[in-house]
Each structure stands twice: as C-alpha cells, then as structure tokens.
Length: 213
Image (cartoon, rainbow, N blue to C red; front, side, top):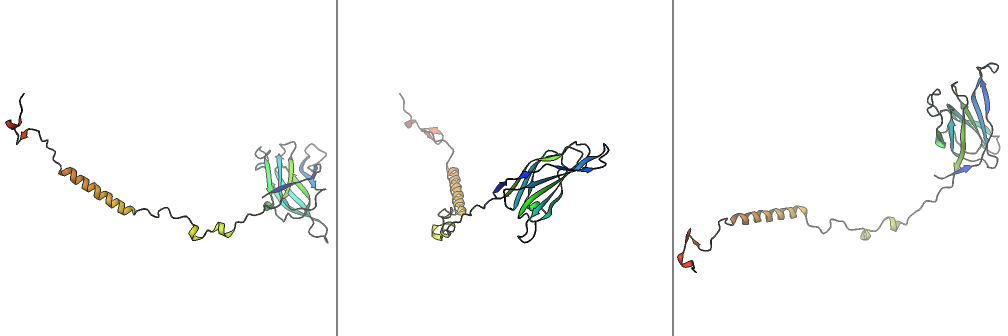
C-alpha cells in the first residue's frame, strides 16, 4: 500500500517535573511533544515513524474533527506503548520504530493535530526524546488490473494437451521388456560352450583331412 509523507511542524518539548523542583532529586520524567499540520487539511493517519532516544513508554493523542457542526476533540489512540523492555537497560533505547493505523485504539480519520507523551521512569538517563519524527497518510490506491474472461479461462479446445497423451502403457512396456530378456537368456543357454576343432572328429584327427607340405 502506498503512503505519502505529511508535512508537519514539531513543536519544542514541554517537560513535566517529577519530584520536588527545589531539590536535586527533581527531574523531568515526562515530556510532551505537539505536532501540527498547518498546510494540510484533516487527513487519515496511516503510519508514524521515529528513532527512539531513551524513551521507555509512549502515549499518543490525536485531535480529530468528527463533523463540521461539532468542535474538534482529543482522543487517546495509543497508551503506554513500551519502547524499552527494561527502562534501566540499553535495550530498545535507540531503535527505529514504526507505528501503524491498525495498532491504534481509535479511528485515525480526520486528524488535525498530534500529541506525543514520552515517559522515562529510570533516573539513569539524563535526557530522552524521539528523533526523525515522520507522519504518513494513505496514498492513492493503485488501479487493479483485470483480464478478459477469454484470456483467463481458455475454452477446452485451446487448453494444452496432457503430456501423457499418446504414450504407451508403462505396465505393458515393462512386461514386453521382461519377455525379451527371458528369451535372450534362453538363447544364450542353448548355445554349446564346446569348441569345435577344424580337423577334430570324435576326439581324433582324420589323416585324410591333414595336409602335408
């Protein structure tokens, strides 16, 4: 299925503080990133791609225009999607991620704004975010190619003949070969193996047949 990159504007991150902001223990554990589409009408979101940078969990909310008579409303379409199986280890920390429409919790039609909520509960990482964020909508469907009925379903007279048509019966051929082999053995066995000498008569030589020089 084809897709089209949607031009967007990614706003700066807004940090939500976790802990006491007056002490060194306070640190931002949640970041919010808003994405707007100033040059595009509400569209059907097809795919979201990005490179993770130490974000452990991701939630996404979309602003949708359900109808022309009601104001747009925010809907949660992805909740606490795990990007790092263990927030305290490196696994998944810098992976490329693709999220598709069928993974979302709601219909992704008529989207006008996007909000990413990033969460990292581990104190091991100094910063976290997502990079190379790209939004795609569904492209035009390619026309389906149809073939005429006469080409896809040939008439019986045009169908290729079976490969075995006109060949002799294998069992009959095998029987005839065995008969020829048995006949050959019988002829070979009937031949005498004794050598007949030129002047040998009953084991003796006939003097009349011998010639002297």
